Length: 348
Figure (cartoon, helix red, strand yellow):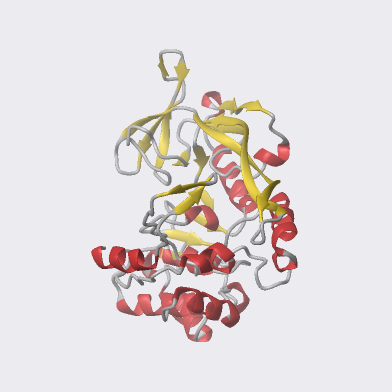
C-alpha cells in the first residue's frame, strides 16, 4: 500500500475544496468490480442526472447505467489502478476459468456445456434459491412461510419520521415497510451491528420473536455459524437528491450561476434489518459466499449471471433450476470495457 500512496501523492493537488474551504490533501482508495451488477438508479435521480449532465443518462445512451467511471469527477481523480488477481472463494482452476469466461462473455457455448454437465443434478433441498427478481424471491419465501406454524407469526411495521414520501422509501433494500416473521424462518440480516455481533449478509434462522430487553423488542436469530444474536430495529436516514443553484465568481470576475447536486436528509426509516431468505434476489446475494445454491439462470442485467454463479464455492454445489440460455449471460459491452480501461490508465 505504500507504493500506492506514493504514486497518488504525486498526482494530488495541494488540497481539496469542502464547502468552499480549502482542506489538506487526502488519499482516497476506491474498491469494486464493475463486471458485477450495475448501480440501481431511481427515476427521480435519473431525471436530475439528465438535467445536470445531458441525455447520456437517459435510456439507451452509453452512460445511462450510471457507472462511476463515466463521471467527470472520476476522470479528474486519475486513479492509479491496482488489479487484485488472487481468488479466495473458489479453488478449482477449471471452474475459475469458466467464471472468467462468464465475466467477459466469452466462449458461451462451452460455458453452458460445462455448467450443465457438472452441476448437481437434483435440487439441493437445504440450499438457498437465487432468482432474478424480488417478486420471484417473495413467491418462494411465502410458500416456505406458509409451511410454518402461523401461531408464532408476527408482523412489524416500520417507524417512519420526517418529510418522507412513498418514493423516498419504496427502494429501501435493507427491510420492508411491513415485515412478517415467524419462528423457524430462514433469514438474512441486512445491516452491520454496532457491537459487531453480525454483519450485512449474515444468514440464520429465527428462534425467538418475543424476546425483550428493556423497552425494546428484539428478534433472536441463530446464525448459520451457530451464534445466537439479538436483532433490534435499525434506523437509516432518508436522503433526497436535489439540484441547488448558487452564485460564484467566474474566471473573468463576472458573477455566474452554478448548479450542483446535493443530498438532503428528509427523515428516517426504522425497521428490523431482516429479510426472509429461503430465496434471495441475485442483487442481494452480492458479496456472499455459499457452499450450495439453487440458481434460476433467467437473468436480464449485465453481470447478473456472473454474480449468481460466482457466489458458489464449486460447480458441484450449484443446481440450475431451468436450462441455461445464451441470452441469460450478459456483460459489459466492448465499448464500455474500452472506456473503463482508458479511465484507469491500466490494462484490465
